[in-house]
Amino acid sequence: MHGVLSSEVTVDVPASEAWDLYGTLKLMDVVIPEFFASIDVLKGDGEVGTVLKLFFNPGALFYAFEETIVTIDEEKMIKETDASKGGYLDMGFNLYRIRYDVIPTGEKSCITRVTVEYDLKEGWISNASHVSLVPFIGFLRVGSVYLLANTQS
Image: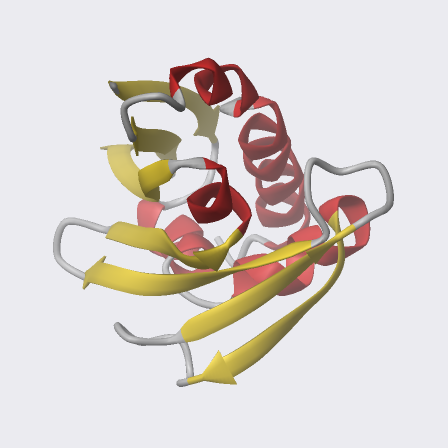
């Protein structure tokens, strides 16, 4: 079973400033206090191939999982990460991908979009109910507040 969920937020900052947040590891520093117990960089420095281990707060669906940055397109302002160990993969997912897009809408405005794409193994279809945009909508909102408070323009 394949699925895609997406949400977006309009932010009144230049796309380049939003990309500086979403296209780098800086986003993790901004969202850790709100959404994670901690995040460890296991390998890399934020480029393609970087591996992160995300530790969740008590009460989350699982304690931790690893994700790998698989795409960074500076020109199109797209970053994708795939679950690479534990978490969703242990729940029958073949693919659990998070994509961030920054889309310019004007000189000092842009859209930040998050998309979750997933694919489940046969026999595990009921676990699709665990896929949610709620935390990612939170990331966009926290990112938006951060960008507006720290804009250079």
